[in-house]
Length: 87
Image (cartoon, rainbow, N blue to C red; front, side, top):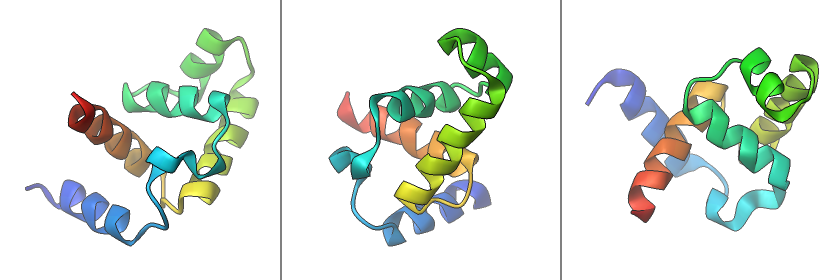
């Protein structure tokens, strides 16, 4: 298992509750998590959702605060793995 994946797994295990409980995430934050998981930049996400890149950055910051994840890569990895587990 690559080091980044292993580190993300360790961080997820230490996180507060599961995001399945949504941790108070808004619908917009959940949308942004999905778009982060496909590797989109703030600009690309903003274009798709008709909001500014700055607004996207604010949403990403809120996601990180609410989930306890260290960065957007961890959010993206978690989202991809969560989608795979639900299949």
